[in-house]
Length: 131
Image (cartoon, rainbow, N blue to C red):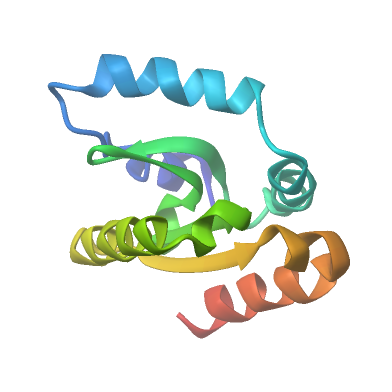
């Protein structure tokens, strides 16, 4: 992807009236990534030659863990609390919203990242190659 094409993908995806708040939260999140997010980020940033990933990026009223804007792909890393019933409902609502915004969402658990990062990267690559 050329530098020119990348610039086309850098449109603002956050709600304009909340962008300044979300931007500050996103910066905090980047500075305090979980171990699983850090492991995945090290893998994703290695693919930058072909696809550019951003971490902790605002979309609408949400901050997604990782996004590849050129592929409309959001990657979420789910810790143990995502199995709690209320959080499952929130995650479903968030995914539906992101889908309505034109994004596909891939979710991986911390455990998947810790124990089988190669498979996680393979699933992400397969998704991108099939789009």
